[in-house]
Image (tube, rainbow, N blue to C red; front, top):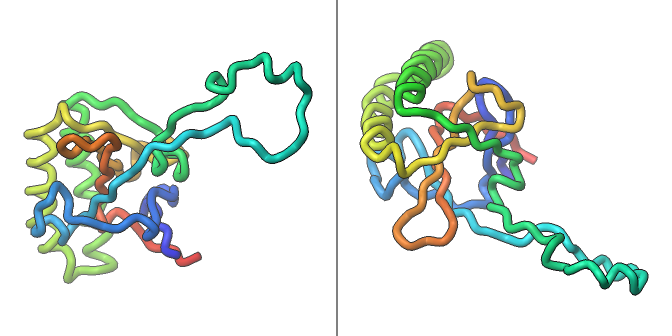
Amino acid sequence: MLVYKDLITGDELCSDAYPQLPPFGQQDLAEVGFEVKSSKRAKGNEDYGISHNQEDEIFDADDQVEIVIDIVDSFRLQETPLTKKEYESYIKKYMKKITSMLTESKPDRVDTFKKHVTTFVKHILSNFDEFNFYIGESMELEGGLVYSYYHGEELSPRFVYLIDGLKEDRY
């Protein structure tokens, strides 16, 4: 299994267990990113088959169940609120950082990254209110953002990643 980690922070953000789709349904953006579908699941109130005291039945089982988004829960993503102005400031710095890293490690990727990431960022900015932003469990805003949005009538959000801000680890 491949686990995708933030290139800067080392935080685990996703894995190849989630099928990858082009971001926002735009095939040209697959050059710089991918999106995955999430699902919601119940967490808590697990029954491990251990006998229990009848007094425990007094408590309502529903009180112990929390509905979570699988990707957020599995990779311990932290939602981070950003204003449009804060995002614009962040993404300029982040793009410079990634471009610099690509120049050193993968110079052949720089032009592709610059060309397509501009379209990616324009899409985020033009639909800004539709997005939620997440960071890894270290809560370092210096790393990459994970973008989430609801596609159509889906009940769980999709999560979008910039591939040049990730490194792959095989487990």
